[in-house]
Amino acid sequence: MKLLSYFRGEAFQRGVHPPSCKLTADTRIRRLPFPPKVTVPLAQHIGKVPRPIVRVGQEVVRGEPIARTDDWLSVPHHAPLTGVVESIGLHPSARGPWVESIVIRAHPGATQEDLWGRPRDLAAATGGEILQAIWDTGMVGLGGAAFPTHAKLTVPKQAHVHTLVVNGCECEPYLTCDHRVMVEQADDLVTGIRYAMRACGAVRAIVGIEDNKRDAREAVRAAIERAGTLPEGEIFAELVPTKYPQGSEKMLIMALFGVEIPAGGLPVSLGMVVNNVGTLAALGRLLPAGRGLTERVVTVTGPGVARPGDYIVPLGTPLRFILDYAGAPGVDARQIILGGPMMGQAAASLDVPITKGMSGVLVMHGAEMARREGLKTYPCIKCAECVESCPMGLNPSTLGMLAAKREYDLMGSDYHLGECFECGCCSYVCPSNIPLVQQFRVAKQILREKAVAKA
Image (tube, rainbow, N blue to C red; front, side):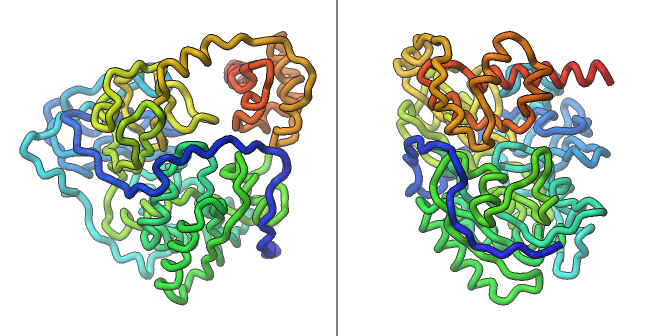
């Protein structure tokens, strides 16, 4: 496959420019204290739910495997802290439904060091050995999709990958965890990029960073220079125009190379694999140490937080514990958005835990949320603002009217509902306050259920 030249550096068509609201862009990452108890949901990614390998009353140390799987589209889980398994059962999840979870109560006197893991020498490891090592870490995409990283880096037999595209855009308003990771953990990022290149066979890697994060670009470039000449190939760090949703892999590839991923296709069809900077930086730390994923950087921000910042948070930490520490006690779950304001979701309760794919906790003022809830929805006025903003070139207005009539099959067959990645641009610009994205999510879920029933 031909190696596409770069660098185009032009914005993709359409999209929107919401206020950035990056309140924590210049604040260093801090570590959140360990909570007295963590709840680790077993279903934190697509694929088969892993099975517990611990029992109630068993003592575990931080980093010890607590759930395993034999499914390639699934990953194991590890203990986020040293303590005792208190219970294994159903607990509330971020999406609402209760899921099987492992609850671990921390030992009061434990230092909470990483006590599990065996350092590896991966200098001569093959691509397959690196993929297995990535699987063992329990790593999934930390950008929000939570797709198993080893599976994403596994190239189909009929395909050939030449470029690893590293997503450092972080176009969602408020969120800055990826930005701070690039600034403060650039050496780990370059190490993780090298492992990922060897795993997928890429001969070059390009880190795409929005041009409102020039300090991140300089930090990554400095780390690339420190790494020197690499046997895996060249690594570049380049700026792309700031626009939402630049962080979508299709939009980033368009900005970097000026090529479009075919409808229904994946980046691998163009010889590319896309990964998030937070994911690869974590791999750069975990793989040499032979450890599992037990924590992640989370942006805790918003007008309702007294001490906003990017925090290293143990997985399974209750949302209520984080809010109390960050200076947002007594808030209601309706004020919380998990993720960014464009693609995030409302918190089901304050008892839900932090999971691998949760990049942000956004706390809004109660009065603002009440005002938003009080807004009326009006009929579509055919202004075409949603059509002008849709980065995929869809017709959200027509899709919305079909959803209102429950013409879900028509939405999927004739109007390409499957191409929508729910970026929220249409809802953001709609003067009639029509909840288009929510309608599309319902339609997709119904179509998935019908497909399963038919199968």
